[in-house]
Amino acid sequence: MKFFVDTADTNEIRDLAATGLLDGVTTNPSLIHKSGRKFLEVVEEICGIVDGPVSAEVVALDHETMMKEAAVLRKIADNVCIKVPLTIDGLKTCKALTGEGVMVNVTLCFSANQALLAAKAGATFISPFVGRHDDNGFDGMKLIEDIRLIYDNYAFATEILVASVRHPIHVLESAKIGADVMTAPPSVIKALFNHVLTEKGIAGFLADWEKTGQSVL
Ligand code: G3P
Image (cartoon, rainbow, N blue to C red; front, side, top):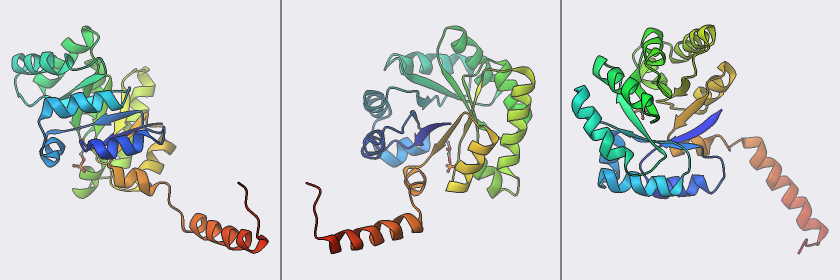
C-alpha cells in the first residue's frame, strides 16, 4: 500500500520524505488555508520534495473553469495530480484530463456507486473519506471493502486512495482490505511507528548494554 501524506506543511513533508516511506502528497483547499501560503507556490515546493503524485484541487464548480484551473496547476510540475470533486462537472473534467494523460484524483467520495462512476470516468485515484463517513454514523471501512469488490469485479485500474484517515486502525484496515493508497496527516503516519513494547524493549537493552561497559564505535 502506498503512503501519501495529507498536508500542505512542507516541513512535515520533508521530514517524512526523509524516511523513504512517502509515495505522494494530497492537499485540499482547507489544508492550503491552514498553511497560510500561496496555493501555487506551496504546490510547486511540494513537487520539488516528492517525486510521486501531488494532488492539487480545483475550486471551480463548472467543467470549463475546472479545465482552466487544471491547465494552470498541471504546468507546475509533471507530478501534479489534479483533484476534482465527485460531481457531474468534476467527472467530465476527469474524463477530459485523463484522456490527455494527466493524473486525476476524484475526491469527496462517500458511496460505492460514486466510486463506480469515477472509475468509469477513468480516474487515476478515487478518494473515499472514511473518517467523515464514520463521523456521520456510516462505516468508512465497509465503504472501502465495497469499492475494492466492485473495482476487482471489473478490473478497473483506478486506485483506491483511502482519505480522511484519523487513526492507525484506519491504516491497518485499509491494508487488510487491499486499498492501493492511504493518505493521512503526519501525526497519524508518525503514530504508526509507536509501540509501548518497542520503547520498553529499547530501554531494557540499553540498560543491559551499559552494564557491559562496551562501546561499538
Ligand atoms: O484531503 C482529504 C481528506 O483526507 C480530508 O480529511 O480529516 O478533513 O476529513 P479530513
